[in-house]
Length: 66
Image (cartoon, rainbow, N blue to C red; front, side, top):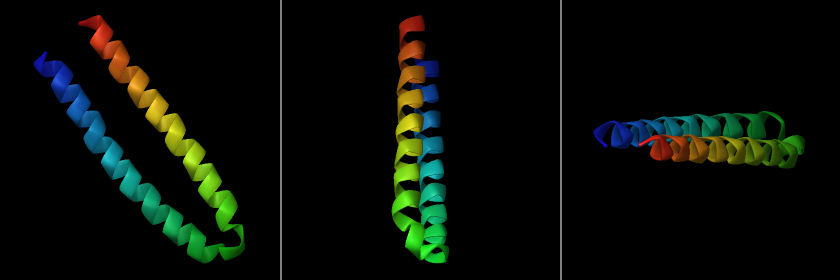
């Protein structure tokens, strides 16, 4: 049970770090390519959704293994 809590906390922490990096990259790219900002945002939204789905699936697999 402790390992499960550790895994979930680790994934949440890494997710927060990754989200901050994506926000930083988004702001840099939006500034550099102002005319393409809508495409950049749509691409990053799909990327974030894919990461969220992956993380939730991974957590579900860990829970089912217990």
